Image 1 (spheres, rainbow, N blue to C red):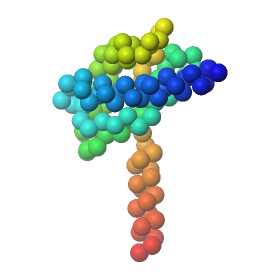
Image 2: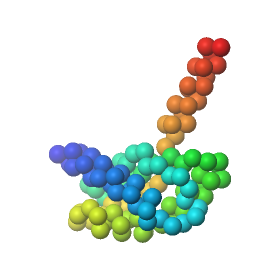
Image 3: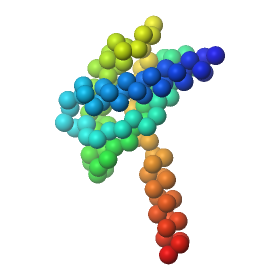
Image 4: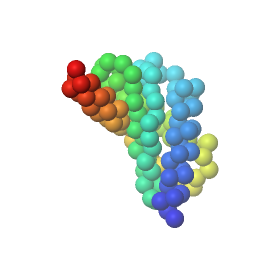
Length: 113
């Protein structure tokens, strides 16, 4: 039961985060950021937000810094939009799955040549 609720909260957070990042964050360091996944613990106390950033390594690092600085604002916006007793603490991490998939794809293409 708790896992089902955590999944629903995670999906709602993912939807709201997309809107917050595109419309509310004004930090110039935050580039083209896509929220790929959100994982919420069963007790709804912590949330890990997986992001993907287009650009160079420096731009990715700067975007992560900008998001980390705006963590309090983002958490308060989520708290206003989702009615929870306690808004989860958020943590940002890069989603390595896309890069990993692209690497495997390029290796397979090289093998076919």
